[in-house]
View 1: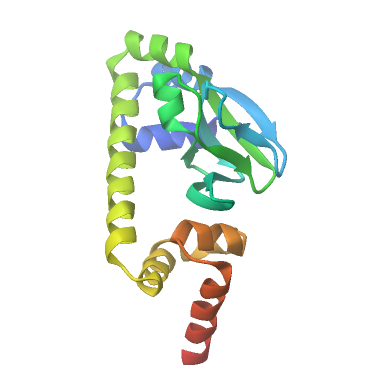
View 2: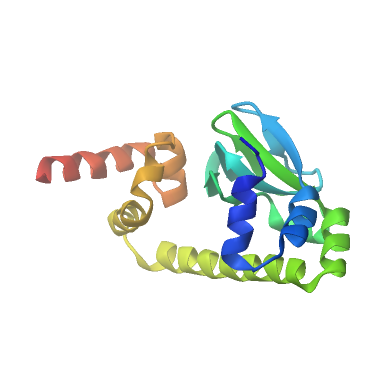
Length: 194
C-alpha cells in the first residue's frame, strides 16, 4: 500500500488540488515507523514536526501532581503533536507517545513554511485544519466545564464508540477527566441497564 494515499484522501476532503499539487504537498512528508511506547514529542524539546497518523494510535498528555492528563489521542487519519511547541518553535510541554505500533507522515517546520509560501492551496489546507482543531478544542473545554462525567462519557461514545475499543481504559478515563475506577463504574452501570 502507498503510505501517502490516506494523506492524499484526507487533503482532498479539505482542499481541491491537482495531481501535481497533491504530489508536491504529500511529497514534503517523510514516512516513519513508530513502535508502541515510543515518544515522538517530549517536554523541554522543541516539536519540529507536524504529524499525520497513517495507521496506529497516539496519546498526548501532560503530567501534574504525579497524575497524567490526556489532552488528545489520535488514530488513523488524525493529526497529533504539541501544536504550541511546533507553531512557536518553543520547548514542548506535552508528551506524545504511541499506544500502538504506528506509521506516521511528518513534515518539519521549515519545509511546511516553504510549502505554504509556494501555493495558497497548501496554506488554505493548514488554515482550515487549524480552524477545525480550534473549534474542536473549544467544544471539548465547554464540555469539560458544563457536563457531568457520565454525560461526557455518553457524548464520547456516541461519536467515537468504535475508537474506544482501541484505547486503554486509563487513556480514555484520563481524556474524559475521571479515574479508571469511576469509568468502570459508569460502564458497569450502563451494562446492567441493557
